[in-house]
Length: 331
Ligand SMILES: NC(=O)c1ccc[n+]([C@@H]2O[C@H](COP(=O)([O-])OP(=O)(O)OC[C@H]3O[C@@H](n4cnc5c(N)ncnc54)[C@H](OP(=O)(O)O)[C@@H]3O)[C@@H](O)[C@H]2O)c1
Image (tube, rainbow, N blue to C red; front, side, top):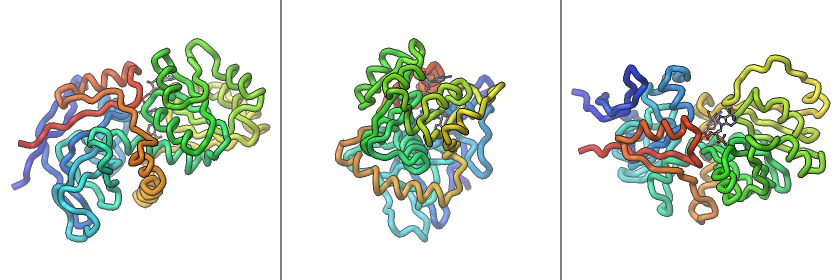
């Protein structure tokens, strides 16, 4: 007879509640993880409302990341032990007491981090590492413009950009967020609702512009992004919070500046690419969490029964960094 577990489900009014579902079974190259905490991502809000298609084969349960302890391992798994603390990027299923992951996607949680911190790391730091370092090629001395800089991905990106020695220009929507991004190391923080980021970046750089733009906004920022990019500049588009359609686009500025436009989605990457990304991240970035050079930015930690409040806080753009949700403990 199949065993049951608690998982966060969506009711007809799009509210979340903890219901009973079948506990997943562990395959030969997999780990069954008892989830201690998960974290909220923008995609969860859309998936809950039925506007984000779940990739084929992914769990229909929300949750793109988690941290917990290994409860069971497949017979082919040799490098993990029962009880080890792990975190992982998921294609779904994090809002549950148990999740099954491929063993090669697990990241060991160092003793310096607690599991709530670990749960906040995979999605935003791997997104940032992929976009800014692997695809964007940011290097020391370059200037990067990070939009929505107080977001989960934004705060991770500021930290990573500073570790490579880049100069960070950041946009954010409130005074509190401006202070937070400066605290994290942004060299210049722009209150984009009050000032034109285009004007400020061009003034600060003497008209030169920035070598890299990290953009989760899309249509609303397209024109100004083209104007603040330097010759041969790169832009990584990884979200469309400001719309995905532009009525009249003049492609000439992009042509004349020889702009490299890179669009990126982490969730849809094939398994082998996610594993390669995770391995590089583990080698190059995880030591910075152990040394304290980088600390995950957590806005708030919620109890399981407060999961709807966590979603409401993200939906109203209030969070600075990540929203973590504890998962109910099995009896
Ligand atoms: N492509 C990928 O692989 C990938 C992976 C992870 C996340 N993402 C995307 O990255 C984005 C950020 O995710 P996150 O989890 O870090 O988000 P988050 O923590 O929820 O922060 C998002 C912030 O963006 C700002 N914002 C929202 N709508 C805006 C608009 N129309 N114009 C300007 N700013 C706006 C708000 O901050 P202000 O108060 O500063 O306006 C908001 O708090 C989302 O679009 C998400 O879907 C993509």
